[in-house]
Length: 288
Image (cartoon, rainbow, N blue to C red; front, top):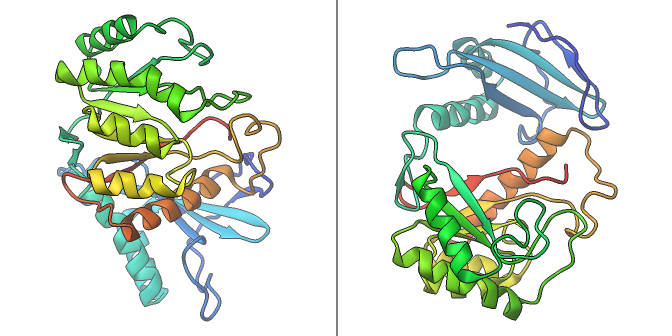
């Protein structure tokens, strides 16, 4: 491993470089979860697998970072005991055998999601496509320009946005979802309300995109699981109206990762399976 230069941290914990992987970094009985993170850096091997990685160690007062080979990481992990070896092997397996299908789409190449907001106040296109006909036309235009998925939203969740009643949101999005689905478009419904998710899925949406990571309403997890929909889990602190006022992180990227990892586990426990055809995708949301 080589030394990673110290750098500013988007959080309260400083990030410092470490020239080597530390021995015995876990105390007896301590879980590796929340302590060790690995980020692949390249894909130089013949089969496309990463050969180098960045390893982050989380301590109460700092984040230590080392950079080196994936093979070196594996050897180090074996020496750190069974729990660390299993943890690292699981991370490496995800790089080697990533999910290849999502909502019927082949993920051998990056997918592009086009956004259509049927709202008066979204930060990008709010008010531009309030009429269903205009929103449908925009969705078809985005598909023609290369979008693989069209994400339809009827409630702005930008920082400072006011909530919208589910009935009003349904009135905004349903004609658009229905019209795009009839044209064979892969539609994602961007909503934090179970009632809206259910209505959109019944009209042909294939994906649920929830800023609350299916935590906003108790029924949301059940709706997504029953429909066998693709799921996009988002992250934010608090509500859209307050999310940017005072977000607090020790290490923003790691804190978000830990949160989303927990939500993936909750989805799996609820019967939303990670498989070739049905998976949970991790996305980051503004508000960090």
